[in-house]
Amino acid sequence: MRHAAEQRGVPYKARLERAEFAVQFEESRRTLWCIAAAMLGGRDLADDVLQESALIALDRIDTFDAGTSFTAWMGKIVRYVALNAARQRARRMTVGSIHRHAIENPARNNHYEKAAALNHRGELNPDQRSFDDRVLSALNTLTDTARACLLLRVVLDMPYREIALALGVPQGTAMSHVHRSRRALRDILSSAGPVASTQSGVDDE
Image (cartoon, rainbow, N blue to C red; front, top):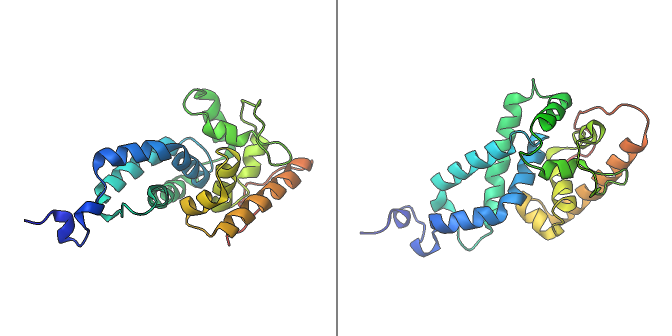
């Protein structure tokens, strides 16, 4: 009797086993977390998004081709789940609520804290440990994809090739997003006026 995966046209040898899924998921967790936080515009639901994404991925494990990138496959699922979560809370989410959540839950996860700690040149400020409303608001003027490219590059120091693979965009687009996002943040943070959180800073390509 053929394996169920083979009956659906998926070669059994190419199938990802659950134990290997767990290993690869842990190896990709930081990248996936940054993607989720970027899509959400904050860190407060990123852990929940990762958990839901993992459950969805496990349910669809037979669709994964073991010869392809696990991070790219999971990244697509994470983006889908995160964007759905962001849409569901869009009306009630504000920069102020994200800031209050960070103060009330300082130990939950510090990845997005580091992402928010960008200086006026759009570079990571390693000594900064607290949220900055103005910087977070500036980040939220970027589109989801631009913000994800910037965080993966600045926070995780990922090569552009890997950023492009994880987000399903051309490498040149990833590079352009990072360059333009740095410039947009520099312009915003060097100005004296208020920051509008409208996601109008950098368009997707």
